[in-house]
View 1 (cartoon, rainbow, N blue to C red):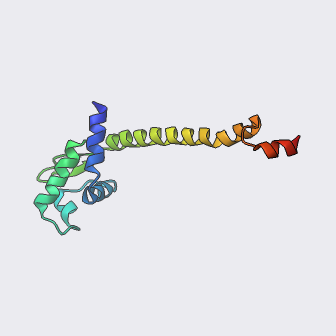
View 2 (view 1 turned 180 degrees about the vertical axis):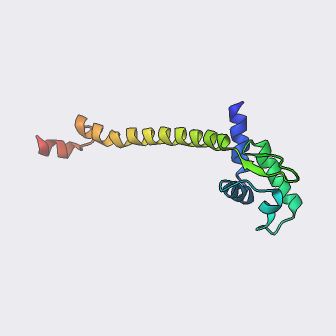
View 3 (view 1 turned 180 degrees about the horizontal axis):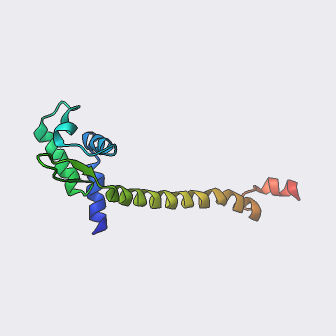
Length: 121
């Protein structure tokens, strides 16, 4: 189910190290050892982060001779972007309708007080 995959993706990116790994992989493939270099955590801990990202469908691991480079799966990011954009558009539409309410009240005269209506007439 796409929603379960989406939940796994957002949960996976809830960790700052995993978000940073995704950002690094956006610039190119890298091995677990290369990805672990900037962190003060064990290679085993980074491997666990990579497994979470792989299970979420955000990265894949290939094999080139002795290397197992990690690759960013952009289809996963596209799925997340689509969900975020759809939610943003729905919220924007709701705010647009809310912005129109005062104008509708003024047009119908419902927004003016009794004294203001008497002065106007």
